[in-house]
Image 1: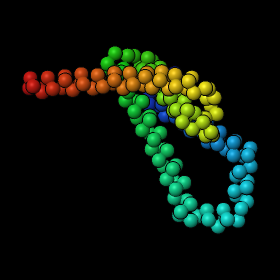
Image 2 (image 1 turned 180 degrees about the vertical axis):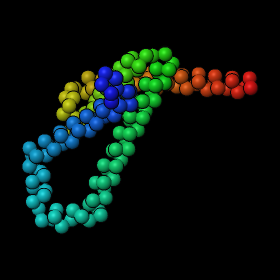
Image 3 (image 1 turned 90 degrees about the horizontal axis):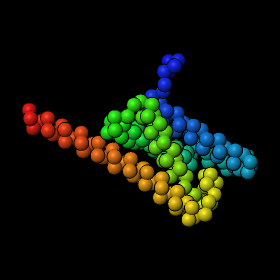
Length: 171
């Protein structure tokens, strides 16, 4: 990135998601190291013997690949929503970047709130420790804002297709 040139929307979304992944890995590592689970697991002779079996290794790789694919999908969907809404309302690049960051934050809040509500004893539910009624309100607000963004992107898509249909009918 050149000096003085603002980052593109896609770069910002990738950077934010990368920070979230780094935060997840750091949180998991700190939690497991504090609990001594990694030391107990790796010092076991059973672990040393079974680690390289496909029945152990393949599901771990599968979970990592699926999670990476989901991150890529999240970035692509948020990028498309932001671009479509930006085109619908003729937003400038700076406004577009702010909208992308806002949508990313709404998605992250929604994911953490749903995780905390559905899996209250999970590792990542510790980010949001609120009563169920408050979590439902947070989920409703963030999901509604994301649904509005999806609907606006749909309006943009329909409007764009109608223009293309009108042009092709004229030709």
